[in-house]
Length: 446
Image (cartoon, rainbow, N blue to C red; front, side, top):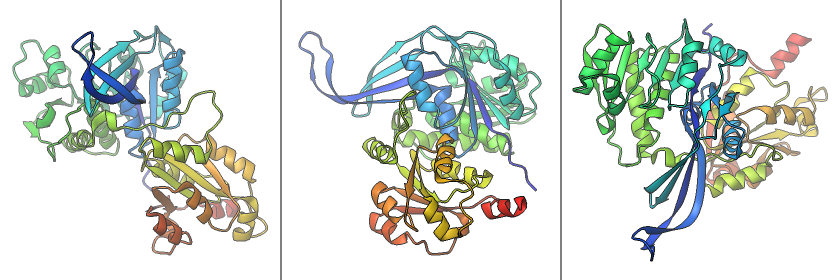
C-alpha cells in the first residue's frame, strides 16, 4: 500500500499584503500626483504566508511555521490563514510587516511599507515536531529572521528542502535539494556574477546544493544540477499579465510539492515554472482572494460565507452528506474540495434526515457534534444543516459555483442534478480514499 507523504512545511517570514483599489482619473490640485477614488480594499497573506496559502490551495496538507505579532495586523493575518492551513505561530519582535499597494486599473501606483517585525526566539517543540512529520520543506526567506531558525530546525533533515532566498536574508544552508533565487538574488550570492548560467553552476558547487534554478522572469529559469549540464526551462505560456508579485512564491511552492511527491528536480522546476507563468497570467498575487475571518468573531454562517465569497468575486464550493463518524476519507475529500475554490460550505443531513436514509440505528454522532467537528476543520468555512432527504433546498439557498460529491457517486445520477443544472453549477466527483467508510468503521467496532 502506498503511504501518503507528510505535509509540506513552509518556514519563513509572513507579512500582510493590502491592495487599495480605485479609479485615478484626475490630478491632485496641490501636487502633480493622481487622486485615487478608493473603491475597495483587499487583504491577503504575503511572503511565506502566500507561498503556504497557494500550496494549500493545490490540495496539499500544509504547515506554516512563522512569527506573527499580536498587533491588529498580526491578528488579521492569523484570521486570513487559520482556515486554510495548519499554523505554528512564533512570537514577533516589533510590528507586523505590512505592504499596502495603491492600485488603479491593475497598475500599482505606489507601495507603502510599515512594520519592522523579526522573529524573536528559537523555535519550540511544536515546530520541531512539524519538521519531523514533513514530506518536504520550503524555506521562504523574506529577511525577517525565520531563515536563521530554519537552519536550527533542518539540521540533518531527511526530506527535500527547497530554499527561496531573499536579497536581505540569510545565505542558504548547504545541501538543499533546490535553491530558487531570482537574478538579483543570484547576483548578491555570487561575487563577480556574469550570467544566470554561471551563477546556477557556481551555487551548486559552493552551497553543495543538489540543484539551483535561477529564475529569469518571462524567460523561465536556468537550472543547474549536480554533475549535469545547464538546462534552460522556458515557460509553457507567455503570460500576458504584468504583475509578477508572488510569482517566485508560486514557483518555489509548486516545485516543493512536486519533490514531495517524488518528482526529479528537473520535472519539479518545470512544474514550478509552468505554475508561476499561469499565476501571472491570471493576475498574480492581486488576483488571490481570501475571505477574511476575524479572530474573536463568531463563526460566519453559511449564508454569510456565500454572500462574502460572491461579493469578492470568489468561487464558492459546496458539498453535502451525513458525515457520521468523521474519518480520513471525509477529511481528504473536504481538503480537496476546498482547494477547488475560495470557500467551502458543507451541507449536513439533520438527525431525522440521516435516520430516513440510513435506518433507525443512525446517526451514531448527533447533529450538534457532527457540526462542531466539521467547523473545527481548517478547510471548512461554514456548515449548513438541512432537514430534507436531499440538499436541493440548501443548494438553492447557497447557489454554489461548484458542487462536490465523493467517488462513490461516479457514473450515477445525483438527486440534486436538476437544481444544479438550473443554477449552472459545475459538478465535480472526487475519488474517495479506498477502504474508508463510516459503514466499515461501524462494522469493525461491532
